[in-house]
Length: 147
View 1 (cartoon, rainbow, N blue to C red):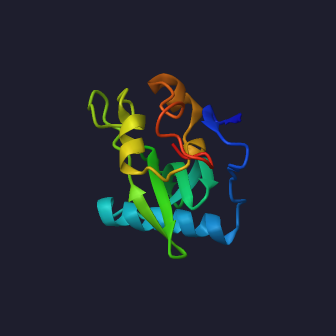
View 2 (view 1 turned 90 degrees about the vertical axis):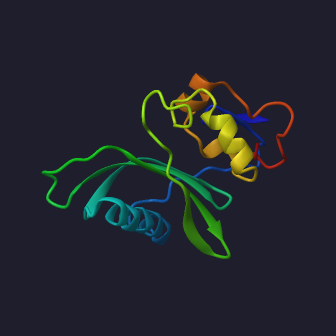
């Protein structure tokens, strides 16, 4: 076993960040851009804070901004899943403080485990795992770095 991004994962679980300009990175960010346009009517570009991809799942945290860089907006985070060769947004984590269903809730990571049992734990940010505890160890952990 080894520790990747603060989560216990089998040695075979590899997490990568698609390099700038790669087709995979462009696809993930384009899906997120379309979602921002749909939700807020803003045409944005992203500054990528983190992009962790493994086994058909991705955790992407970005700082959206206007194309000229003058307008900056709140962080936009998405969990994406690749099914049948196509990426889709599986979830946009809620970021409201004090909401028990949101990202900062101490139960958010365990709720992810129930909703997405095949998602590799290693894609999640280590600071979130540390803050909320490590639900990846013990019962329910599957071979290959999933829960």
